[in-house]
Image 1 (cartoon, one colour):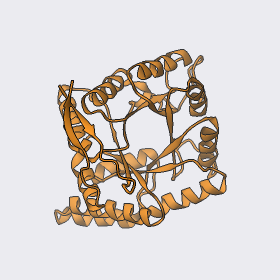
Image 2: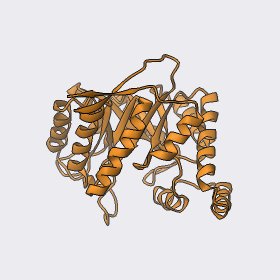
Image 3: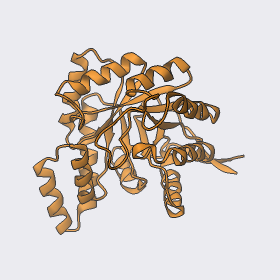
Image 4: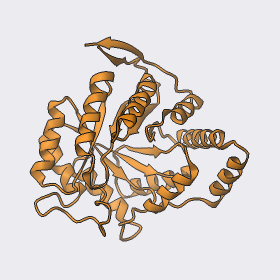
Length: 298
């Protein structure tokens, strides 16, 4: 018997979604299961499961997607990348997802393997995410989500590249986009305005990162070349000295989401890092309460 979410449909409810990553160890499997168990009652619109750099967690991702869908009845969006695979191999993975009942894919170029100088397409693979989106659209089996970058992607040639790429992906058949995390609401709002000016009308969901560990987040931001505001660094340094880092993280994250709401944003995608507590607290601060009961299904 498995637990499945029974949704309480509410037209006024704000949209939320969660990202998880696939476990590599038995202990990590338990952590993922607990994270999903605690967040599932919030009845997310969907949850996503990531790929590792270079496609290293391809099979683990597939197993996690199937487990979450089977045990909790959640709408799971599986990450799919262009890295280190032929077109046929990539589309075979997509077909396997479809056969497992998965109807959403987050289509990404993907990060190169560790140690590689940059992304190099497989000789028989997809050259970029727009090509992958077009092929998935032609298959006609999926709602296709793509990545978006309010701050410049490390490989962006200029300030217009990210907007142009996002437009290409929507034109190729993407249904919606999820952004990389950012630290200030104005970053997303400026990006949204630039997208609208470029003729992009598809839904763009802000990616929200509750800050579990400030030092770790700064390292991750450096790898992504995401600017860190000086005031935020100072605020966390002081909060950590005073033992108030968690309270600050929840407060700042909820405040940012509230500001985005006032500007018409009605959906948020939380990067949980398989740690549910801060995400639950932020959702509670936003007035998002459990709306689902867990029932047993075969």
